[in-house]
Image (cartoon, rainbow, N blue to C red; front, side):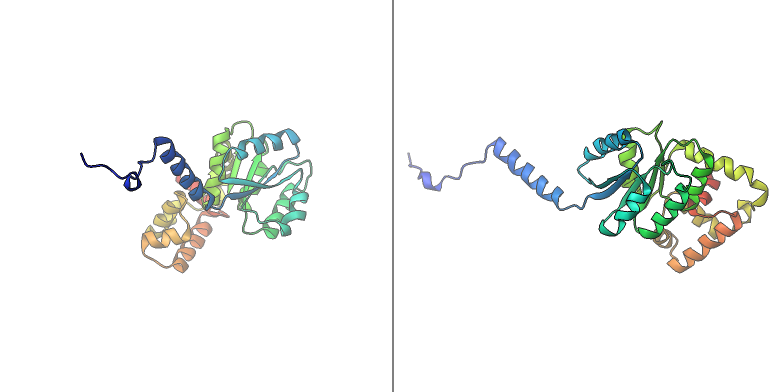
Length: 240
C-alpha cells in the first residue's frame, strides 16, 4: 500500500471550528453597520431606566443620551450626533410643545418619537402638526413595538399608536365643516395620496408614478391645501 506523507494531508476543519469561523464572520459583518443613535428623555427615572433596558437589548441601537427634560436635550444638541429622540412632552412644564418646536429647530435631522400617556388630545394633535415621526402610548406599547417604531422612523416611516390615530380622527371630524372632501382631488392627487398613506417618501412616489420630485411636491402641497390639513400624516388619515 502506498504510504501517505502526513505533510500533504489537509485536515478538514471540525464542526466547532467552522461554527467559530462563521460566528466571527457574522460578528465582523454586524460590526460594520451603523447603529441607530437614540436620545431618551423622560421626567420619570424609572421610565428612563426601563427604556434603557429595552433598547440595550437591540445591538442595532445605541443610546447616546438620557435626560430628564427637553431643556437638557437641547443643551446637549450641538455636541451629539442623534438619529432618533424618544421623549415625553409632558415633562411638568406648560411649554412642552414650545420646547418641542425648539428641539426640531436645533436638531432638524433627528426623528422625533413621542412616548407619553396619550391622555391629552390637544397635545397629540399639536405634536403631530409639528411633524413628529412617531407617537407611542406608555400604557399600551410593548417592548418590541418601541424598538420597531425606532427603526421605522429611522428608515423614513411613521409609527402612530392606535389611540393617537383615534385622537387625530376625532379632531378632524370635529372640524369637518372646514374641510373640502377627497372627491375634489384630481386622479393624480388620489394616486399620490394613496402612496402617502403607505408611508412612501416624495422620492418613492416619483419613482412609482414616473414623475419628477418637484411635481410630487406640487401635488402634495395641493392635497394638503384641498384637504385643509397641515401635514402628510393628517392627509393619510383620510384613507382610513
